[in-house]
Image (cartoon, rainbow, N blue to C red; front, side, top):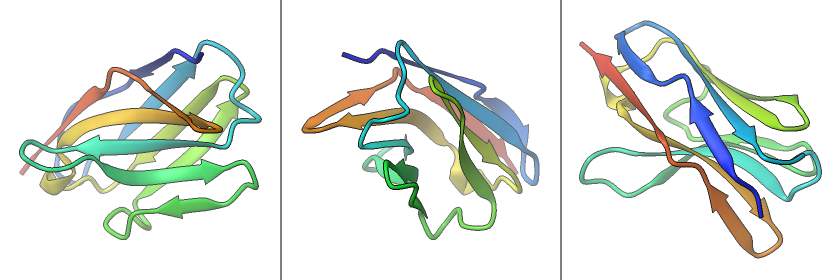
Length: 114
């Protein structure tokens, strides 16, 4: 079992930045993957960025060059979001995958005003 708590969401103007953090209840340094997803109203949840246990990092095309995912320590993963756009508005969820199990945080709201 892994409990995840996201923080750092809020309201920001277009072009601004936010940094999201995800704190895990235990070390997530050796899990299959850690990542961030988002879900906008009326849309499906989508992958934003992920780090696999091999160190591979993938980003959604829509955020490449603007967002950066990183492991801060054994229990925390962050998402630095720069040059934010109104279309980035969504609830952002932290995800940890351990074998066949997926763990989710409760989500944090990011709202980008134009």
